[in-house]
Length: 423
Ligand code: AMP
Ligand code: GLY
Image 1 (cartoon, rainbow, N blue to C red):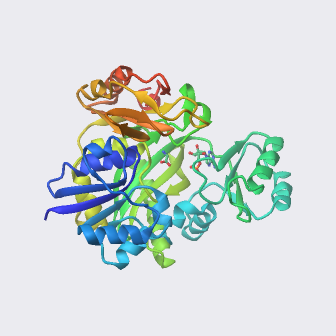
Image 2 (tube, protein in one colour; image 1 turned 90 degrees about the horizontal axis):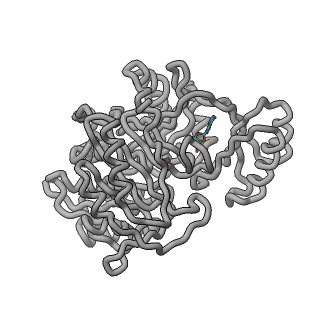
């Protein structure tokens, strides 16, 4: 069957998804909203507000869209997936209710408790007074989290009581627009982080790859936290034994508990894990692909991702199988100087095409715009230089060879992406 597909989102994650889907012979036409300067070379841009379920439904009916893929969490929480499914439009993206696994950290803690899932010990507080009192008895560092979504800025690791007190004052002060919502005070976990991805239709759990992100802005994991400055896949730390433990102790009990709560989860479940002495502990869930983790997964999975997403949405994952090659991928994020704080917009990027000529390299766009043929940076994270090769060292060399060819004075990137895998 030839399909008309709509992808929602406009980051490097969606560019990579569209790049892979487009190679599948089932894909006839592909639309994207809002897209970016890279996406518009391979998909037709639809002028839609992706947070308006009615607008998306109407577009799908008018254009006879066969399949919708939702990239970011915001449209999921706006109810776009639910609205499309009500109209019998095949959709990849979990329900708003089950997306609470990402949107509310206290909800996830309650699922962990019900499912006996290993996670950091944590308590939830609704006011400054009780949180401050609790800090009196804590060992430091502690991890402070606002309950809801905060664009990656809602987590602070406080090294001392003084910093912790200041932080909870800010958190309860409304900076995150979360006034009245709780905060969590959590035990600090030691170990190595791992991102683990599965597709699930509520019955079958299908692992689709591992990755390690690099959250800090600068080399050697220094500087402020960002949305992610680069990723590589597969993660060296993931052994067969560890994967079995992650599925049996964390993923399966989560899927089962969500079913028992009548909140079946159907979509991609991205587990952020801490690994210590071969044992996994859940840090958090996301209900979407990671960005930039998606970019490394997509160059490894390629065209088959469309079949897998379709099987997941149609709830027939039981019959699916991932065909893996023995390869590695790496993605380096180019960001605007100043990101994750303030940065200039509208600066010109040149020579992307030279980077794209390096064999095995794909340049995925994030915050870019095409202005009469000139590529302008309009976001914080702007390009993702991505390479798949037969081993990580080769992918690393080529990705940095390609990155050096791009001419953008107002941008920066980390030079050490993948160091854990290369060591
Ligand atoms: P989250 O938004 O929950 O993924 O938190 C963002 C980052 O903060 C994680 O990727 C970890 O690096 C760090 N983090 C969150 N919770 C903990 C914890 N309990 N212990 C140690 N680090 C944590
Ligand atoms: N790279 C982290 C995330 O997508 O949440």
